[in-house]
Image (tube, rainbow, N blue to C red; front, side, top):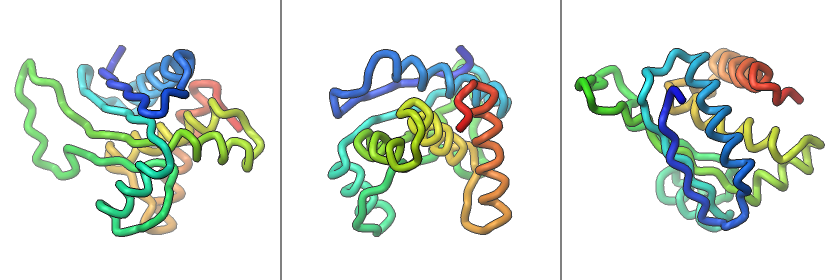
Length: 153
């Protein structure tokens, strides 16, 4: 494994297979993105109400969303100390929204789960979609990672 991934399931519904998928997919993404080995990421699966509260408190949006990321190294002053892991940040995923969107988009829950986790991970690495150019770049990279892992549409 390239990166350490700490997964928390606050819903009690994420399967062991899905947790394994998340770890393997994120390590594939880390390899593709040349992330420093030993870096750490936290992934937490929550219910809709929890992510709505987080969205309201941190983004001033009083609505349920599918994924939120909190980068810990979101500037160019990353401190590299030998022997100390790089903490990339936290990814929070609404598991009920994951299932709902998989049904809406007509693909597997695994595909949607992979899409959301990679989306959140890329945000931790500095990708964004605030304008059309950045959005195209980010979404293209997401698809490349998902396809490399075998989770194409």
